Image 1: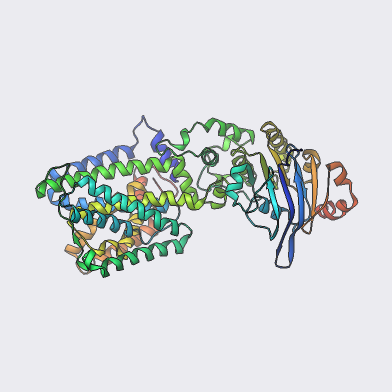
Image 2 (image 1 turned 60 degrees about the horizontal axis):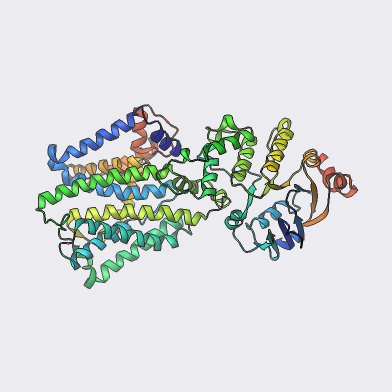
Length: 332
Length: 251
C-alpha cells in the first residue's frame, strides 16, 4: 500500500533496495541516450515531457479522483510560453519554463477552487468541461491564438546564449531528464510527508479528515495545484521540443491519454508514470510504423490485459519480479 | 461572574420527517464532569453529538462552546476550538496503519507542512506511540487498520480523536464492539487518561455498568428530549429509567 511503500523506500536507506538501484540504472541509461542512441532522443524527450504530465494525473489519483481534463494545464503552460516568446523573441528558456509553471499554478488555483467541491464522475467531467472551454477559446480567438494552427514557439535562448538546433535539443533533453528526476523525487517525498499523507486520506475518509479540523476541499486543492504545475512543466517541455503549440494540447484525447498512461504504468505510482509514458510512446511509434491501421487496437488490448491481470500496472508486474509482492493497490 | 460552561446548548430542535430528533434540548456540560448519555434507540443521542459538532444544523437553537456561539460553524472549525469526536462506527483511514492514523491526526493538529520530512519522522511519533499504548493497541501499531478487530478499531478511533488534544471529547458508544471482558478495563484506562489530559468527555453508552462506574453525571434521552439528569446513583434507580431504558436493555 502506498504509504508503507513510500516510507520503506525513504527509510530503509543504508541498504540499497533493488528498486533504488534499478531506478538509478534507468536514469543512467537515459543520460546515455543522446550518446548511444541519438535516433531515440526526440522520442524519449517527448515521452519524458508526457511523463511529467502523467505524474500530475497520478497525484490526483492518489486522492482517489480521476481528472479527464488535465491537458488544460498542459496546454495553458505551453501557450503561456508561446505567448512569452512571441512578445519577447529570444526570451530565456528558464523564463519560458517559469511562465508556464506560473500559468499552470494560477489556472490550477482558479479551476481547482471550483472542481474541489465535487467528487467522482462530477470531478472528472468538470475538469473535462474546463479543458474543452479552453480548447474552444484557442480555436475561436484565432487572432490571438492562431486558431487550429497554433503558435510557433521559436527557440528560446539558454541562459543568455543562442544555441543551434542540435545543441538546443540536447539541452532540452537533459532539462527534461533533470525535471523528471527532480519532480519525481519531490513528489515521492511530498507523498510521504504529512501534507501528502493528509492529501491521500481523501481517498479513504473525508469525514474523519473534517473531524481532524481540516477542510477536505482545501486539502484537495493543495494537491490539485501541485498536479497542475507538474502537467504544466510537461506542457512547456513539449511545446519547446516541438516548436509549436496547438489546441490539440488541451484536446480531451490528450487528457484521456494521460489517465491511460497512468493506469498502464501503475495507477498512483510515481515511477510508473514515467515508465508508462516511455513504454506508451515506444509502442505508439513502433506500432504505428509496423501496424499503422491497428495500433490503437493494440494499445487498447494491452490496457485491457493490464487491468484484468495486473491491476498494479507495469510497476506492479515489476515489483513482483523483484520480489516486492504486495496485494494489488497503489504503489509509490 | 461564573465561568461559562464548557459546552452549552439552548433549545436545540430538529426534525427528520415526522420524527423529532431534538426537541428543545438545553444541556450544560461543565469542565471536568464526564457525562453519560443513555436512552433507547432513536432517542436522538447521536443527533445531539452531530449538532454539537456542526455536522448537522439545528432548525432552531444554539450551541455554545466556552461561551461562544459555534452553531453556524462547520465541524472542522469546532474541532479547531477543542472539540474532538469518536464515532460509533470507527472513522479511520483504511489504507493506513494504526500508528499512521495517529500520525495523520498529529500532523493535522500541528499543521505540519514540510514536504521533505517523512510523516514517520515527525517529532510527535513517540507521543503517538504512547497514545497507542494507552489504548492497549501498541502491538497493532504497524498493522493496517482494516486487519484489526472492530474493538481495536474503536480504540484507535478514540486515540485519533485524543491525538488532537481536545478539551471536550464526544464519544459515541465507545465500548460497543469491544469484547465484553475488556470493556471495563478499556473504560478505566480511558477515563484515567482523560482526567490526566484534563479532557472532559460526553459519551453515549448502552452498558449501564459502564455508566454507573465511569460517569459523573447521566442524562437520559427520550424522543428527542432530556428526560432526566443527575448522578448515576439517582438516575439509574429512577423508576422511569428502569422501565424505559434499562428494561429495554434487558429485553
